Amino acid sequence: MLVPHFGLLLILSGGALALWAHRLVRRHRLAQKWPKVPAVVLKSAIRISEDSDGMSFIPEFTYSYSVDGKDYRSSVHTQGQSLYGDREQQARKLVEYLPVGLVVSVAVNPEDPTSSILDTGFPELWIVVRRFCLVLVGVGILILVTAAA
Image 1 (spheres, helix red, strand yellow):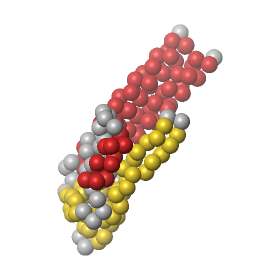
Image 2 (spheres, helix red, strand yellow):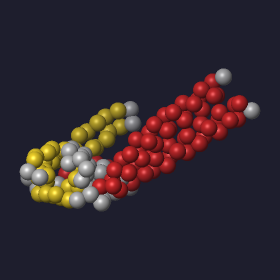
Image 3 (tube, one colour):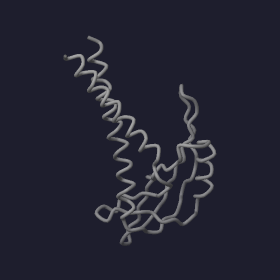
Image 4 (tube, one colour):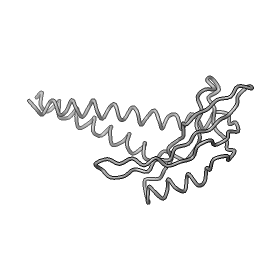
């Protein structure tokens, strides 16, 4: 009876993570069509996160921008680090490339100016995560179908 539960776990967890990754990739693609406005980088730093898998180096940014005379602030970026190479070095280069005080262009949702995104590169990782999770969902379905037969 444990096998069907495992299949269901794969479907639910893989599906949830695939949807999350899809949302990030889709937002990046939509933002490519949004109008760009100037923004000022207010924070440019690396957050170091340590867990059982080791250390993660996560670039974090905060920026301010104006639309129609109203000021906004956001920390959303495309999370565009490459899958290949030293993740710490990539994060450090990105933070050096976008220092505090730099004026950059950010894409702003024309329907909701509170929604913006700083383009820090193509989100390769999230495309791979989405594909891998869809495979997990498929395996989970296969397990359920096989267990039911």
